[in-house]
Amino acid sequence: MSLTVVFFDNAHWRKRLYPFASTRPVSNLRIGIQTIEEKWAAALNLPFTHQTCSPLHQIYPFESQPDDSFLVLQANVLPSLELIDEISALTPGDALVDQGRWLAFRTDDQDWSPAHLLTRFTPIQTSALPVWVDVLEDIFLQNKNQILFDFNQLTKGKKTQNLDSSNRVFGEWVFVEPGAQVEGATLNSRQGPIYIGKNACIEEGSFLKGFVAIGEESRVKTGARLYPGTSIGPGCTVAGEINQTVLWGNSQKGHEGYLGCSVIGEGCNIGAGSSNSNLKNTWSKVKLFDYHESSFRLTAENKCGLFMGDHAMCAINSSFTTGTVVGVGAQIAISKFIPKFVPDFSWMTDQSLGEYELDRFLEMIERKRRLTGNKKQENISSIWRYIWEESKLTRANNQHLNI
Image (cartoon, rainbow, N blue to C red; front, top):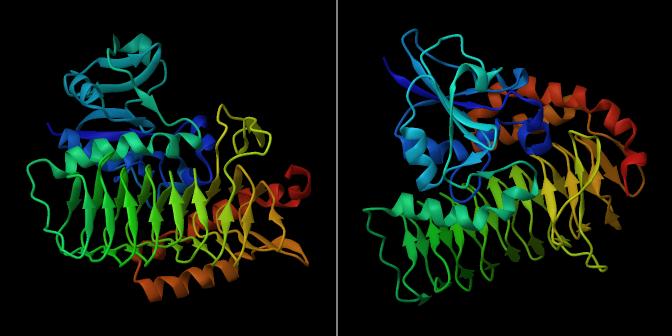
């Protein structure tokens, strides 16, 4: 009997992580260098599948064999060495819990369900201190610690590629994967690690201050300044000033401008000279739009920046106020501060506020797919259609949601 990890997020709480979780399972969120599922799969050395919401089944199906047994994990819990040991020790019928909230359970039952879990399984209280990703700001808040966790796991027993003598290096906490090009850059790892992925390019005059991670085949352009807590996913191009921010991957911030305390999805484009605020003039707590509540939620944070869903784009010199949430596929070209919430598939200019027609969006995605060779886009049109339909009412009420 083989053991398969199942990442479970087919629950109401996943909507608190929209717009990012509207296009992917929660376990596919990037925090640190890797996604949540990549971390767990590597740590447990097991294959994995998903139990997620129905709109995502086509791209992320539940896959198993008749003789499989299952290790079911809450998709929004981050790994630690202590938690990995506890979960690895579970036997069929055990459930690891955190103050009544289940973290993982082990079962041989092919027809498993987390319903009434604590009455059907033997609860085992964790002695670790689990870290949950419950709301949007948790992504950038936990990023620094997860860069360290991933760095230690990914570099264990491996040798870094030698750096060219044209670089200025402070500290010895730099790891460069094969094929990466790093020339004339300043790398300061005295306070935290710097990870540079395969075939990445760090151009002359760039400054990286750990904790920083650069994904495979990403480009850091001349003069970029990247500060602690920053993760650039694979296939990105970045420039300007970036601090405590996660770019999921295949997104572009290729020019000057500031991005801080922010999370950017896949396939986004941020126009030249665009910047976000991450601190209110009143130094008060920041509100963020919550898809689950369809209203604004008061966070516990004084600093929150921009949260931009997949394939959203903004024009040159865009200005994002503190705690802005931009939905999937939104197109923004306005000269004043962008509203604190922009619904999915909005089309926003100084002259009008409308919607990005689905057919036009799909045509754009197809052109992008052909240029980039991203075959994943071939099968995802049903997800775009679902999100577009689901967000119709929110777009219609947009004027009432901006504060």
